[in-house]
Length: 272
Length: 284
Image (cartoon, rainbow over all chains, first blue to last red):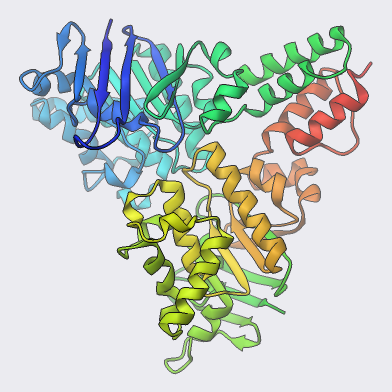
């Protein structure tokens, strides 16, 4: 197991309500987990706990075989990276090159090898042409890709995407979703994506729905994304293809017609 | 007439070769319009709406807002223009700053010279319109959820009671339920008040569900001004300006290809597609 959360409770202050309530889950190495939930459900708190930016009120977090504690946090954090929501808040370099190199400098990579590594990671996220570009001239999607290159440069095993597409336009969103797919398939990274964009969950290995700090649903995308009642109660809704399947199944159409239509809609939804 | 643009060009610097707005001609009624502005990032959408409430001024051409000429002269009073046209920026919740929700909503009308009592009564009305409940009014806006804070920010503009309300991507970053609620509220506000609402959006599912009139911006030019059906029915236009189809329209095209449905007019929303499927059954 690469990431394991065990009976996590979290609240900001003693007198406040629990933000996370007895939360447990496991994620094997190389797998992708999508955490869905409405604004304020506690999704991002999970990311902050795993990154060691917050400390659980009670419960245990394991990264690899080690428990995350005050002692181990600095060393475990080297295995993790996070891509935040706002592309403008995580650009640390003056140019794309500097930004990617920042992580390498932290890893004390030799200067002579630095250039080669920067080129390699920029190429992976398709930003080779922009090495000397000023971040102000980049689109949101491009900035997020540079952040991903930085994360790749750190050679972390786990990458967390914390609503990384929610401020992007459709083109930027597509770019990042394609990037996540590549990281999952070709680079065998362990990935957690925190989102309320249900399309981002379609290709995850496992999907978890969070509402008011509790897991209300978990399973494969096919199992979870058709659960209309629970999704709606959690501020989410069926994506169009699954909405149509739900209504067709509850309609007066003949069974044979229902089957043909819903089979095709399943196929299209998971292909789109 | 609410807003009128005649041959409007805009460049950030006089000598710049690139025009951010390129020969825009446009008329928007003072009442009862629901307009969406679409187009790629950098196509000039935000620049266009910033001209509609005198935040930017044309390099050449003429803009009239409710018969007031928009010109960059020191003595031209801009408040009357901005009283007519209220603009809600992207992520407006970042601009919330007062200690209570009510004070924050009152800031706008006070800034336009209303007495404290008037401002308060207009703020209460705006809060009611956008669905901010009374128990939130004395709370600090910073204890609210993102969606609620955004409503507070929109209420602050509504409280000035502009004739035309412009919103730059009001639903970005909200969860699906909050997104639907906000859209429904804006539709209700439009119907109750007859205000013209203009909205920038990238979300074609929202655009197809709510738009009557669509403006497409591309490289600083207004390249389409018309009904949504005419835009989404044209593959050439969508390809040319790199616009996505709404999800259900894409599904409809694939279902038609597979011989499962047939239609003359492409369904744009999931409701339209469902109606078609249920009416015809699977198409033989």
